[in-house]
Length: 128
Image 1 (cartoon, helix red, strand yellow):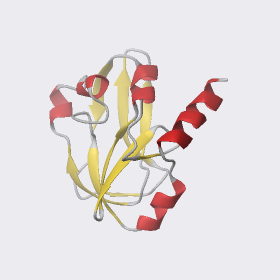
Image 2 (cartoon, rainbow, N blue to C red):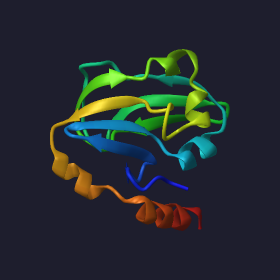
Image 3 (tube, rainbow, N blue to C red):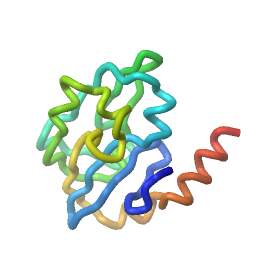
């Protein structure tokens, strides 16, 4: 079940907004599809990111996958714990497995993201 209090990007990232700050991670669907996550290339603090572009990379036992930024802005914090324990993403993708916090440039980009029920329909369609 996907939490209702966050927004979802079609590339299977999520964003939880607090003021101008957006905490970003990958969805439960994404971590499940990737399998056991063994490494994450964390973005650097103070890096500018654009919505719909790669902000980091995750390696699992199955594949390497880009993490797509759901919003544009500047990275103001990263989850350092993932450097030593990337499996936290598998264990708690919507909690302790967050990847970065972005200070948003344009909050209207949130309007392009899906809510939980739209995202559930999206992944059902994608599975067909």
